Length: 179
Image: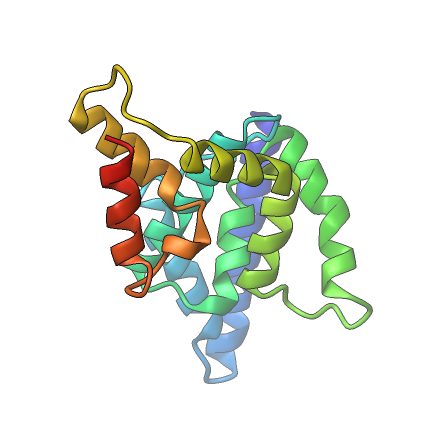
């Protein structure tokens, strides 16, 4: 906890310093970033501590992206803000992964690259494949129609052939056949 508080203090200090430098130069990039972080944190973003729980990892990512959406977070701040919410094992993973993704030039890691790398680590392809198979084999059985519909929607997001408008008819057929 003390380490987390120290990191937060250092991040806020760095953002304040950057805001001051930018203000002295006639720009407002640092101030914008600082206010963006403040706005982001007011939405109570969850902390992710790692471990092997693919559903938890995916839920964390979805929650962070919802906050990005409602705060209209600019792309170049997303990785900075999201990684601020990493702790314990996953924080160490990011400290080791970031230099590889940034490369020699210290380029800011794009959100899409972070997202893909994060999912490869914490929501591996074999888990996604198992969820696809579970979706393909889903039948109502002893579930109520409401329970079946909820499970169908939850698992359906892992099956790319039913995504979008083109797959809607096939998705309906699959749903009815599983009743």
